[in-house]
Length: 290
Length: 290
Image 1 (cartoon, helix red, strand yellow):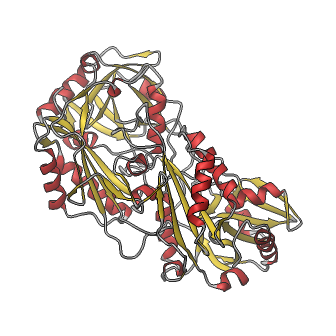
Image 2 (cartoon, rainbow over the protein chains, first blue to last red):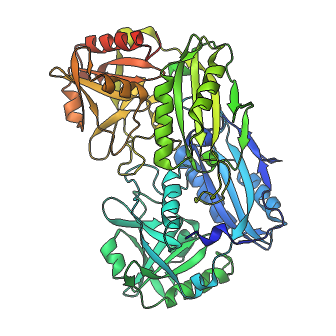
């Protein structure tokens, strides 16, 4: 089964528009370290009525990622202004911001003098079946697992081959998203999203200290400390614990919230908390309205 | 201390020359998946007297990497011809070949119709102090470790942030190369090279099934089955075992062979086997003459 996102998109005013270091254009040097080594970070941001949602939270994460990788992050005001400028004509879309360490150096070691490159692009927003949001999705546990133990855990960096391969695995199933684990049997996230579960009056999400991407929607939920009346806890979650959840949902900036109806043969009886959280996040302009 | 490679280079006839999909030029689409996700593979090849060394072995590894990542590899004859063409004016240099999955797709999942992009560039060859080769180098054990357990182990793919960070760590020391381990205490490789050790009449090199890059020079040594009169064994090597080696050396296509004089406070009394292997590999045109 082909994934719906390859078929349906909401039209945008300026799909394909791009700014490279502030200049309209669609190319970059082949010596850019993003191409050479995946040496950079990125953000994927929902755009609604001309506005990039949670722009400040995204720019903050971009800055934190650059700090961890010792990349000189472009000026905040510059990124903010370019992001807003590019989104003005966009009714509903996706803004992507890439920041690479810069251009040059044949080997892994960056040259002493280097300045970051920034690439901002606007894309169409994928449209998923309304049933994904109202009735929840079928899901499963991915065969491919994430590597653990690197210092890169949590960062939304450009080394995303694991996700590219995971998305291809998921696309070959009848599920729009899959649970990704690590070799120790810990649940980490979805192939393109973060994961939450409800159990005994708590909202739980995996600790991402050893693998995974700390998503902005996940961060916004955690920051609220209570959501849909539930206390939030970040902890290691084994697959067996996930199977005993009362509810499970995926979230990210583009899909919003997808309640989960089943994981393999395990059925969940409720999606009510996920629906309530979806309403709260939409109301707070953290995710786009479906 | 700054690393010598940032200061000294051997001049080439055409440094910076580039072919993008066969056309001279230095830019690529910002939608190329190499930039977007590190979705591709690469080769780094020593060039001597106009010839890329071990070109067939490099193209074979490129093809194997593409196969594992389900990237449609460009035609062998095409890559071969472009590589040879670009190297003709190069007396001593480095050829880099990048193959990405292609252009397009905002998300991790590649579009159904996509064709690979190829980028060939020629660079100056770094010149290292002759003492590195004649007397061996000082080395140490890197603090940063490699993640383990992904399906990407062994592939020379474009997700190289670990190596970028490792090279920066090494550059801040007085050692030109460091031993990289995994979280389980296994020796994997150097930050930009493979590693061998001599013990009890055997040449040992780490198994790279869970992490690391299967280098072409490493592969050429293993393929010979006997080198410098020693049988070769590929196996898990703990750090304690490395400390008990009679000799240790690093190798890759650009540096050739670097005998190791010490790892931290551990001294090795001999570099004779490494020197003999260096001679054999140079004679076989597997590495460039120093």
